[in-house]
Image 1 (cartoon, rainbow, N blue to C red):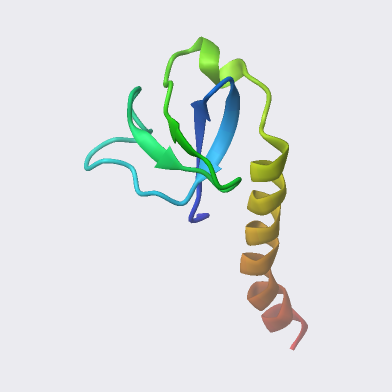
Image 2 (image 1 turned 90 degrees about the vertical axis):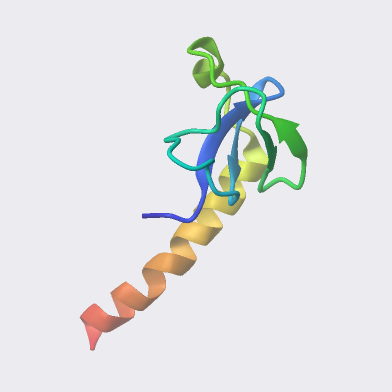
Length: 79
């Protein structure tokens, strides 16, 4: 499981390290989130918003984080 979550906001799908509110599987519409691209945005958890394009900066940072998390596993398997 990755430490970031995807969130539609400001016309794109962004990623955030912010925790979801208690009991929520996603950021409810209107929730303020700090994104991986460095923006402070308001979530839009509507069905249409999930079809928006992905923020290139958030995508790049999410891939970097994912790759970092996979390094220890791959090193352990080579051992």
